[in-house]
Length: 469
Image (tube, rainbow, N blue to C red):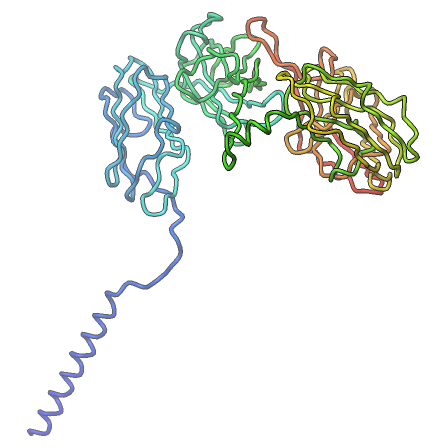
């Protein structure tokens, strides 16, 4: 009997121990696991999203996880555009919006939070969340969409805004706040929803405090006439431009690492640099450029001497000082694989302080071979020559060449090897360059078409491509 009891007790103790071990194991959370990539989700809103007859000026949005609100001034857009910006705060799972303007009767309000709402742990954004309510019995039904293109480059600037004015006076964009505002996405598109139907003037302005066109260096766009917005408004395309470019401030030269005496000694002499590649190689396609360290008050082109490989003087080279008086060019029909000598005497130039070169120089250089270049042939399909197209060949952000097109085929025997982008400028006034718009004169900018056409030029190769417009 005692043996049975002992066995029973041992069994019970073992069972309890096993149960305790199992229970303890069950409350230990697993390590690792997939990263949270799910953005916050709205679970409740007071008043409800798309509610009507709303009276209060406090809105409370509740999400399924802890959230924060980032960069409110850059992200959040309230329509109609408020006189006073709302106060937006996050606390745990709630985002509270306090509207500081008195609510207008029978008006639909929308708050586009952009990318401001995100979860605290991983920073997952609730992208372009828009909350809507009306102080009247229904939501407004007006819709308007379209695209904004930078006229000079054909590209997109997603930092811009499209604004709508109910005031149809031409000067409203200079003096008044807009009624509605919409952001531009990464593809240049914009959309207005839940706006009052009616007639508006539409513009494009930078996303900054004033929301006005009060500076001709600002990026701007306008439509030729006012638009009537209803629930089936036709899309519109804006071509944005800068009427005047911002002037860059002159940078102060740094004298770090050198004494004042050294700097004064350096300032006593004029310096120059050439466009020779590696200091020895001349491009067959371009002029030889001599750039001076300071603007010149004096330059004597007759003192610059160019000789061929046998030291015969070259008399038909054109040597000119640029109108800005900072560089001179030597224009000559270079032939491949030849040696040249360039003599630059000490007294060839004098800067505005009266400084000359420290000494004269004789430079030896060689022209490139034609095999270092490739030929280029571009065939254009559906190109309307009546629009006066100009071919722009781009390297990086620089226009390497602009060529007015009089035929649907462009051919060049020698072209510098590189990766280029091709654009088409529709040159309305046929001056060969892009021209900005002017709102006061109701003149739209000239338009550049950029479809990301690539041109890869290989050396010693016939490079042919076809571009369909």
